[in-house]
Structures are given as structure tokens and as C-alpha cells.
Length: 468
Image (cartoon, rainbow, N blue to C red; front, top):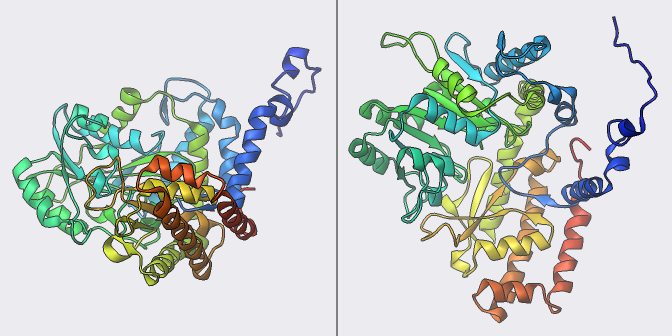
């Protein structure tokens, strides 16, 4: 039987919102939505943690699944009316395991985390006790806040507030993970858990070495593959699942889905005897310890995207992301610029601006005015995260718009032009950021910046935009 719609005469109150589209009901929000859409279509998006998801995923995010409350897990809910939500979440879990080629007898997954940070904290909450010790990559080395970041004056992340953390680092000369230091620190610190993952590291991970360190110290091994999950799923990055006890990820970066999170955990029999006991602890940590009802519209969008991950088209996309990032990195190096680790083997690169006397804050501001979005970022050797010496550049979003290697070389040319303009401005304004911005926004340079912006928009606007 189909759905029967009863056509009722709405009351004036009902017409005020429920039966009107956004444009007719809220012109201000609609206007902002259109402006944001135009910004995305006409600009060059290089933020490594962003992507452009599909029309199908966005249909899920705006669907009736957003109306339903479903605390608990499929088959064990605290609300009625969840027969279809149960089917949806089970489908999402099946597709998540399939996307990463995980045997359901050996791996389980929770798809309810609202995003990556709650997913990470759920792992810590479920498997650790307060003040247990963890190790993660230091933020100025490319790590993430949730891996235990703190400064000499402040415990910045909740991870460092509730647990004792000790960071490992990249080699200050090469920019690569210093695994010898990691081992030395782990043997001294004896952490309960070691996190392998980053938000700004352009190289792959030596999971074999980290596994040996974890075994030597009795630590659990967790990989946060938020940035590279699309590459891992397609075999374009080392497979963390072969080595880890726990794997967490966001779903909107290189995986190109909605904004959500997942936690994968080993289950079943251990090779050394006994059973893994992560599943109940992690599920309990997600709900009820940290979250309430899951966001079912996100789970719907995630299930839809995980279907795409298994297609030849997505495999080709992941390959193109790496190829595009490599092409852009080579172009910048050919212009004489310095990149952390001298290049990339994933989806991002770190442009070290310190040899030029520039800062990430200045370049982010210049590029934004040119309608190119990227973000200031620490590079190895920076004294402080507050004054980063570089910018982070990512390829996933513009690859989703159909750009190839030659197109990313053109992106590199735009970046080159923007940087040369910044050098010219700084030669007159001096080193202070406030003086630099004042001159950038002043009468002398506004026409030059506007001309570059017009060139960027004319070029970027011709490319396909998913979901529009």
C-alpha cells in the first residue's frame, strides 16, 4: 500500500512555517544559504578537512529521519516506532564494515557518534579510567586536539583534562614521525593507549612499528583515520585495520559523506587466547555515557555514502585525490617553495612559509580575499601553535568537482600569484599582522586583489559542483 496524503485546509498558524519553503518563510536564512552556495561554487576550496558531498546524501540530511528519536541500539531502543530506523542503522553498520573490508566476525562498528571528536572521547571513556595515560601526535607536529593536546599553561583538550597525555613528535629536521622517540617515550611513560593519527601530516603511517611499540608497552593501539579514511577504504593508504585494536574516523573528509563519526573495534577471539572486550564498553560510552539519541538523518546519509565507497567511481576518485595533491606539491616545489617532508603521499601538504618571512595567518587572509580557502597551520619546528608558520592545503574537495592534475597546477599558479602579492605588501607594511591587513585592505592593493579574485572565480565557477 502506498502512502495516503490527506489534504487538509491549514490554519493560518500552520501556514506560518510548516507548509512554507525556506525562501518564503525565512528570507534571511535563505539569503545566507544562497550566498554560501555561491561562495562554494565560485571559489577554490583547499581546506583539507572539507569536501563536497552528494545530492543523495543531502537528501538524507534533510529527510524525515531527522524527526525520530532512537536512544539505544537496534533491537534495544528506549522509544517505540523504530522499526525502520533499526533497519537503517543495521544497514549502515553492514556497509561500514564492508567499506573497509572488515570481517563482521572480527570487527564491530558503532555509527552513532555525532562527529570525530565525540568518537575519540567515547573510546577513551569506554576503555580507560580517569587519569590513565595516553600518547598522541603533538598538535604542532600535525596531531589533533583530541589526542591529548595541552600547553605549559593550559590543558586545552578534554582528553588532557581527564587523562594524562604525553605527545610524540615529528623529527624537527625531516618532518616525518620520529618513531624512535615514540618508542623511547612509550617505554618510559607506559601509556594505556597510543593514538596513531593526525590532522596535518602529509605522509603515511608505519603501523607495523607502532604495533610493536604497543606490544612492548602493553598499550592499546588506536588509529584515528579521520582525514585519510577514503584513502584507507580504497587501498590508497596503509590499512590501519590490520594492526589496530580500535579505529575511529569522521565521515565527511576524504570519505565524502555527511558530518558524522564511526568507531570500529575488534571483537571475537584473540589469537593469544580469550576474547576482545571492547564492544560493550564502547557502545556504553557512546550511549548513555556521552550522547543521547543518535542523529538518524546523519546515519542515513552515511549509509548512502558508504554505498558509494564500494563503487569503481569512488576508487578512481581516491586515486585522483592523491594524484592531484602530488601534482600541486610538485608545482609549488618547482617554484622554489618549501613543503614539509618535501612533498606528500596522501591528500594534503603543508606549505612552509618561514623561509619567505611570511606567516600562515597572513597568507590565509590574502587567499581568502582571492576566494581561495585554506587554513593557517603549524609546521614542524614552530615555537607556538598561536603563530603558525605555514598553511595546510588539501585536494579532496576540488577533486570532487572534477579537477585533474593540470587543473591543480593552475591552482598552484593562483597560489603563487597570491604569495608574491603578499611578499610585496609585507615589504611595505612590515612584519606586524595588523599593519599587513591594513595595507591589504587599503586603496593601493584592493584593485590588485579584486583582479585576482575575478580570475579565480571565472576559472572555478566553470567546474561541476556535487549536490547543486
